[in-house]
Image 1 (cartoon, rainbow, N blue to C red):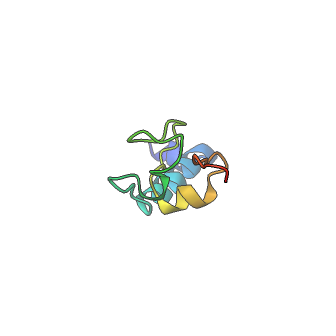
Image 2: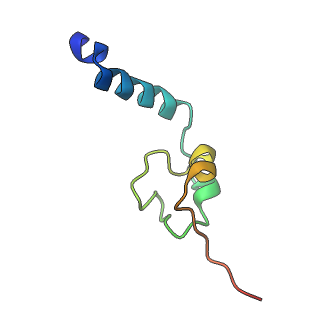
Length: 68
């Protein structure tokens, strides 16, 4: 495990784990709750789904809207 953590792939995995810890998903889906890809979790499989950071950066974020 020590060797893996010092490899480029291991360092990247640790960086992503630390990043995800800073963005805890909100129980109600937060800013993603109105997205068409949200049904109690991100249907696209993004682990950060349900957080403000994911909603701001998500290029797949779509919401239903009515044209007037």
